[in-house]
Length: 258
Image (cartoon, rainbow, N blue to C red; front, top):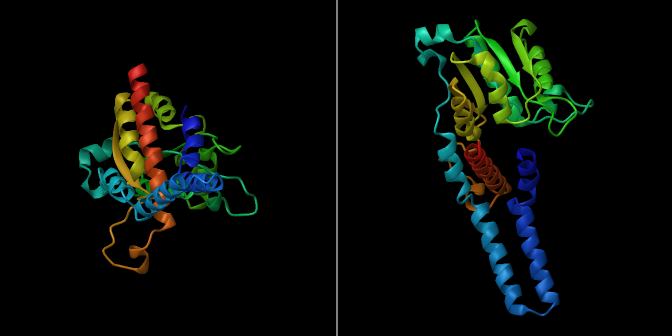
């Protein structure tokens, strides 16, 4: 089902929907349905303006991302720090292209997560770095590619654990539960994904410590020319919000079915 959601989101993203409305307006014009043409054009313009200015995506995503603060290892109690044995980095996407460096073959989301995981593991040298993520849109498992990139960035192979089978967060939680059990561990994923990931891991009886990264909405009070015009970035943020809502709804339905 999660694969079906990944398939649907690009289709129902703001840009394809807006383009469909414009094509519909053209059809109404050809059919000389002038009132419908005017209505559809007005709707399309309003749709692009509202989402292009980041309403409501920026505020909604910001609220979602700021639920958990970035991890400060120094603020973890000494007792809990001694119990931590694993830093878990959740997977995302990758595209195999031998013509570019492997770090570029990882999605930006996956790379952000990996770098944050390595940073935290180096602050907690007694820990192992677990890289999770199967093959979704590519023949290679995300965790395998991320593992090679981690080694190229100086990670010791003996401190890496690769979990290449799970294809979504629910599968990751289920697969890792026998290993992590009730011990505290660091959970690294995107800030917009953290709330859903925490719930899935906690529902299996685990005790993750959130370490969000890959923040999409950044606080910046400085005004620039792009502050006054609709942008493609804001349309993309709207797409990310749609995916987050869809995934959250699916998790809720799945828990009710179970």
